[in-house]
Amino acid sequence: MRPVAWPDAAKRDFLQQQYELQREHYRQHYVGADFLLIEQAAIPIGRISLYRSRGEIRLMDIALIEPHRGRGVGTMLLAELLREASASAVELTLHVEPNNPAQRLYARLGFRLIEDRGVYHFLGWRAHDGADQGQR
Image (cartoon, rainbow, N blue to C red; front, side, top):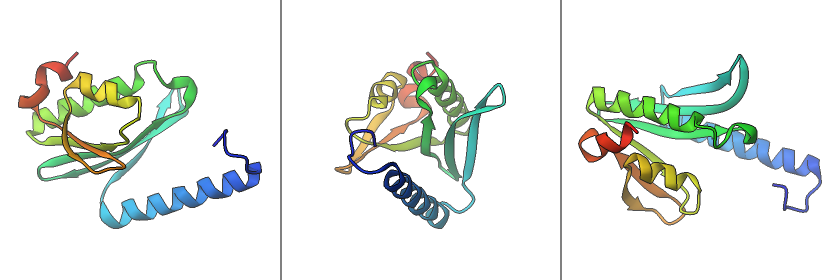
């Protein structure tokens, strides 16, 4: 929101509204999902939202505050999810914007494009698709 020429209060209101809309969408469409806080040394540094169903683990959202990005935290969390998906014999899926820098991480871990949905790429990983990449 830094480049947007709005007053700080308007930015806060907009972000709060977007958060509430996203939260409502997730609660409506992913009943029973886990909405978790990521902490380091008991300090909140991000969030992760997951939905587990019979054949899938859906990574609905993962976000780290800026100082903690690029330090391996996201990679470690994804590696854990890959291990869980492999052990449960399910697919790990997620949506990501095409220009999001995390695309490089997902490709390195062996995620494949399931569908280009325009604004988002829908990616998936199965143990037999990327087991050797996911363990790096």
